[in-house]
Image (cartoon, rainbow, N blue to C red; front, side):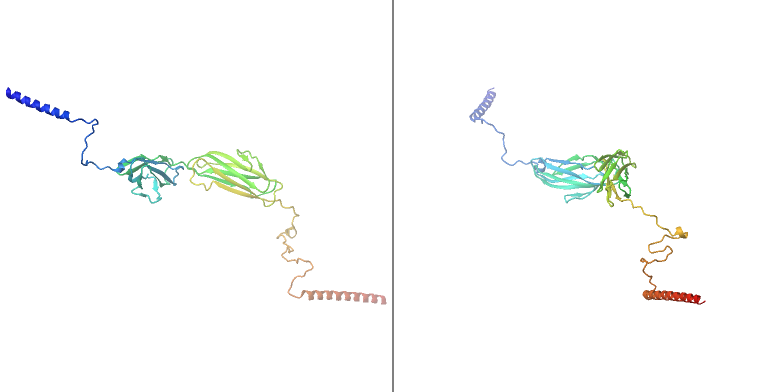
Length: 370
C-alpha cells in the first residue's frame, strides 16, 4: 500500500511539474502554422497547364460550290495567366476536301492539317486559316464537318467545326436576237431568251435589256411582262427549273431624224439568287444598223429583152460583149496610127465627092448636046 501510495505521489508530482512548466511559457497571441525549415519536394509545375487556350473556327462566308476553293479562318487566344508553349492546331480533312497550302505555318500530315502556333503569351491571339478545295464530284447538299484540336504542353482542347453544306447551283444563260438593219420609222423587234442548264432550279431570275443609240428611239409595247425605265427594260422570269427557258420580246422604232450608219445596241444580262459556278454566259448583246431606203431608179435595160437571152449590158459594153468607147468621138486602139487613118479616110471621102460632082456635070453637058 505504501509503495503504491509512493508511486502515485511520484506521478502526481511529475504532472504538477509539467503543468507548472507549461504555465511558465506564455502562448503567442497569433498562432501560426508550423513551417519546415528545408525545401519541400513534390511534382514540378508545368507553366502550360496554367494557361487557358480558347479556339474559334468559322465557316467560309461565300456559298460552298463543288469545285470551289475556300478558307476556314481560325483564332486561338490564351486566356490564362501563364505562357502556353508549343501550341499546335490540328484539323482532320473531310474526304471531300483537298488541302491547298497557304503559308509556312501549316502542313499536311496523313490527311490532317497541322498548324504551328508557337508560344502564346497571356492574352495573346494567334490568327490564321486553313484553305481547301471542294471536290467537283461532291453531291449538292453534302454536309462537310469535322473537329479542330489545339494542344499546348500536356493539355488539349477539341471543338467541332461549323457545319456547312455544298450549295445548290444553277447555270443561267441569256441570248439576244434582232434584225441586222432597220430604216427610220420602222419597228425593230428583239427576242431575249433566258434559260437554266441546272443542275438545280434557278430562283428569282431577272433579265435586263439596255438599249442605246445616238438616233432617237421610240419604245413600243409588245404585251410582255417587262417594265421599262428610260432605255432599260426589266423582265422577271421567276423560277426556272433545270432545262427550262423563257423568251421576252422588246420593240423599238428609230425616229425620222435617225441618220444612216447609226447603230442600235442591245445589251442583256441575267441574274438569279441561286449560286452559279460560272457567269460567263450571263450576258449577251446585238446591234442593228440604221439604213435609209434606196432611191427609186428606172428599170435597167436587159440584153435578153431584145435578143432573147444573154446578160444585161455592163458599163462600156453594147450587150453583146463588144467594148464601146467612153467618148463617142474617141477611136478604138487598133495598133495603127489612128490620126493617119482618119486623114486618109477624109481624103478618100473628099475625092469621091469631087468625082461624083464631075461625073454629074458631064452627064448634064452630054444631055444638052443631044
